[in-house]
Length: 315
Image (cartoon, rainbow, N blue to C red):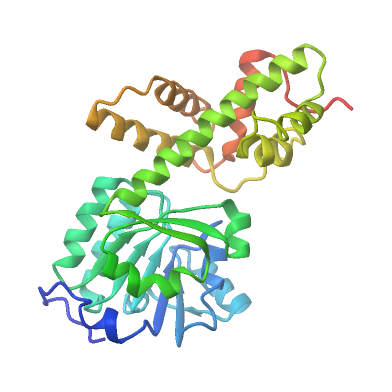
């Protein structure tokens, strides 16, 4: 693939049918990206990594055999992954990358981003013969580590067909959910639904503890009954009841995703009173911490402050 940012063709007509990507890169080696990128090793001729803190890229290369490179080098790959905190950060990186992108490359953004910004990125890259897919992931760091993430993809079906061999390296499920922005929309609503389930579980377990029921005993019943959710199956036993609160996905990013979902609701004037209330509560919990300082599960500490009840085992 030749480097050329002056092309105005839509790209991929020939490459999707006649070739497979030979080089891939991964931009952003945080809690998720660190694990996702390692699964690409050995599947392609070249696997490059870049991080805004270069020490992380160099450490990743040493541990997994990737190639730590500059941003200018990273974006010459056939398939470029990004997994960054926000769409604004992605936009900044794309602006820096534009002069170095190769025509017909596909940029796969695994950030939990803003749908309208995905559409803008797609238009910007399409103008130089590239494609942009919004492809956020779900499955937490454990899914990233095991390569079993759920990937919800918005954008061109042809671009997805070309990039799919690379996405499959860290995915257990890949679903093309619609045009540009659809992937980000599904992820925002998914995370908001999780927040609703988690907040409801905090309330329910607190009521039970107030009546003398130990949280773990309650969860043992709930998780074999109709009240179960991912929050009761994993979040509460693994992070909250045991007071571990390991910092992975941070609460400010959870609040950001809930805000994106509420923006989507506002755009189409769909009444969502429960989503709106929980989004506001998660934002209030997030405001108790500096950005990046606390795990999403620390919303429970905010609710405990409201209720006066600690959701922990007394045994």
